[in-house]
Amino acid sequence: MSSNTFGSLFRVTTFGESHGAALGCVIDGVPAGLPIDFDALERELARRRPGQSDVTTPRKEADAPEILSGVLDGIATGAPVAILFRNTNQHSADYDSIKDLFRPGHADFAWESKFGFRDARGGGRTSGRETVARVAAGAIAKMLLARQGVAVRACAFEIAGIRAGTVDWDQVERNAVRAPDAEAAVRMADAVNAARADHDSVGGIILCEALGLPAGLGEPVFDKLDALTAHAILSIGGVKGIEFGAGFEAAAMRGSTHNDPILPGGKFASNNAGGVLGGISNGDVFTFRCAVKPTASLARPQKTVDRAGQPAEITTPGRHDPCLVPRMVPVVEAMTAIVLADLLLLSKNSRLA
Image 1 (cartoon, rainbow, N blue to C red):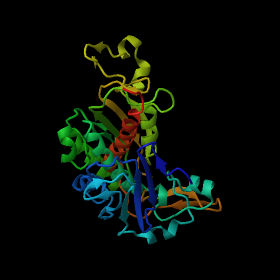
Image 2 (image 1 turned 90 degrees about the vertical axis):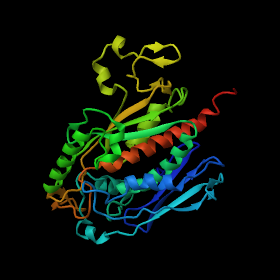
Image 3 (image 1 turned 120 degrees about the vertical axis):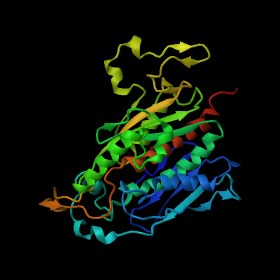
Image 4 (image 1 turned 135 degrees about the vertical axis):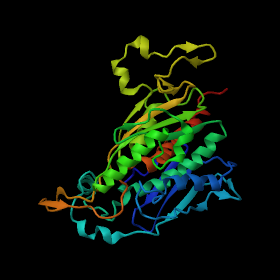
């Protein structure tokens, strides 16, 4: 399997399984001399950590990062940065009763079709627990971006069909669902808890922005800024769609409305393009939204088949998020930051001066 590495210069490799001994990442391309803020790394991990509120999984993991290499006295050495997370709260026995059944909505059937084998303990590599390594790498990427004046932020724009009426970024970390609208946050949380009580789940939409991005990032053909971002975001389990700027609404617009008038000083009168033109950043806010499906693991009977192809019924045991969105917000930020850090380093080679 060769799909565990992402990036060109800022390259991230993740490893480990949900119920294995540990998970982690190796980040190659971190510039020597970059200060590594351990407190900032801990803060990012805490935002993704399980068991943080009543709308997330009750699994308890400290997610304490062990930096094994690439950092000396708080400074990146230029060597690969390796970070390890030991699993301490696995309940692998929860999955014994379904190890020969395929969970609807999960990768079980497709994974076994490809490899002829799968890790039934919580999904192995396909588990959302793999994202702890992405958030760690994204935290390092954010440190690099911050030195260039670039910041990445995301929020729960919609959950269970309940959309934020306003976008107040100061509200995002003040509520359990990470919504930018305090009133909508209450209704979103109620919808999540109602789904949990019904042994069901809900999905939503995450809004992400990158501020301070200079014009000129991205390659004009295959490695467009939006193409690489789509690759990164769609690689997160549970993400089913992505749109930039006006997104799908652009299909109903006329060109005269969709085009963003260019103003003196390289500013734009609107941002239907989402901050990217021809696959290259234009200096405006880079913005997109991604759709997140309802959590597939349900504590209610569902129809499936066993490994012999015989019909069966399954109830998925274990500890699961009734909505993926709140804990996925920092994961979306992390993958966006990784893309931008990589393109920022690549941009240094675009021209001589």
